[in-house]
Image (cartoon, rainbow over all chains, first blue to last red; front, side, top):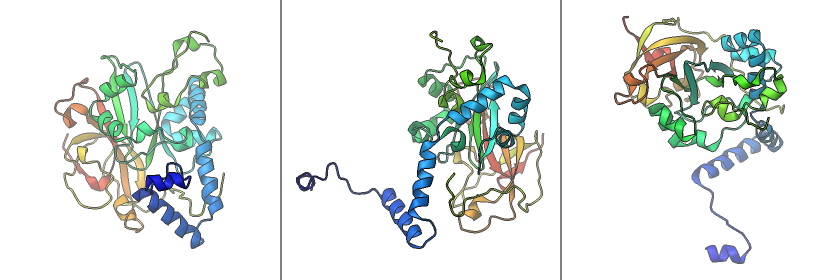
Length: 206
Length: 112
């Protein structure tokens, strides 16, 4: 089989997996029946691929610089994002705040629920069985593997997004950033900070 | 923003069963194992926690998975559990918690 594939120049051809085959079959049926068009499917894929964590970082930077916005964000994340001019359809956002006493981390143990409208597509590790099963069971050990040691005097809150809410961690603003503007602040807010497996860092070169 | 047919809109004004719990109420997750599409993780069934907030009323996922309306909706809560109550051998701080969204029909009242 592999010899034949090489002879015909098919490269590393492999048969479709069970779920790949199901996806292709379902998509082709939906198109064939006129429920969606190929162009719509492609446009949606492009839209999701184009999203990154930048929108989330802008929200965090605004919360760091505008106490009123921060209060509204913690009270109702969805409404605050809409006020911010972000299109967040289908997103019921709960923002959880890191403090000197509490560190928050996000997981979806059942599947891979994630605030895609603010952070883009989730990283592969977020969808892995390893992360999903262990971060609820031994969160401090998992965070240490990410290079984040949560001090013993800080409480840990794991948020399991099992249903209709989506979560975003509001990290603590580093003390060295006094006087920074929103755009500059947004640059240190990484995806991992907003999942809660990292905290913002100010590099010495800045 | 591409237009996609039948994009979900997640309205919040679903007709719902009455709300039973408020923030601060102690509750226990039902310990039962029905078949089907369940959004209550196995690891939390049978455990006791405290209601952190009411999230709103949402269609019942077990019903949605059967292509039914999921109405009347059920109140959805965020419930806070002490890690040491969930995992007897938990190694972290006594104050460490896990917070989970759980629908009202999976919760039983616990006296304080």
